[in-house]
Image (tube, rainbow, N blue to C red; front, top):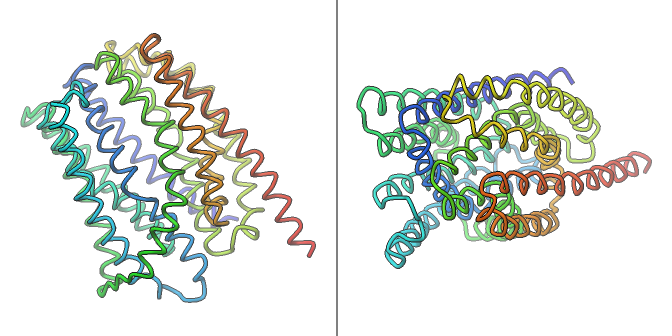
Length: 417
């Protein structure tokens, strides 16, 4: 158990550093771009995130499942799996860029509202990088190389902060400069993680069989990622379409602060993935369950503190122009326990191969979330989007509580047998 908590602390340290660096980067962009400029900035990132979410095909999670199944083979699975994954991502990148350009030309930019063509083009350069970061982390977890993932994250966070500061403060490049800085920082992350794996696997062997396996598993599981995007990110694009850019900036900042509070749950989730890969989902469950109870209690305490600190911290750090973020952030805190449970339980769904079940639930909730946002955002704006998000995480919490009881029953039955 001490070994698991050491990994949690190590991963938490990397994630804490990442979140702090991202928050400092947000402070810089908020101060230099203002609410309206930052609204366009986060909307452009929202679009490339959408393409990345649709395009990464959840290959990283399928790879974890393949590695779990091939536990006795060491890293023999790595050359064919990694080669096939890179080939798929290359094709998806070209398709994503083509679709984005086609949408912009066909609608004369109206689909993207406040985002200029040059700004969107720079943001879309991140597409292959974001897809690799998502799937590459899955490969590193499957290969039991969590420290490499942590290193890439820490160095990438430093690069993002420094490059953004240089672009806005020293070079005065404004919005486009901030996006270029982000792209360069992502390149740094990819160089570290992909470079490490290529050194371990100098001869990639993509195969049709492995590609089919990745795509087949990804298609089953990817609906889960799409559904997650629908109830966590799509509201930013809906806000950008119906409301002024500054309102998008307020809401996105509140969401980013919530992401900052998920540092420890995300670290526990990474350790849980390592546990189920080594031990299998049933044998890993007793340890994972203890971690789950501990992290839920910790998150509840952090949320209470964050509620009272928010007005002073946001006003001081981001400036008084961003004080409308406070009530949105306080509303989102209601959903913290649901977020935590969903994050930590993900490894049980994946390791058991419950791709379609997880995807069906998530897509259903995501679709209802989009419908609710389309109904309330035009009238109630960012506050309506925040309430929809709270309702979404209440629904996911109920589903994962049921899942936890089922896992407990199955694990006990296996011990008895």
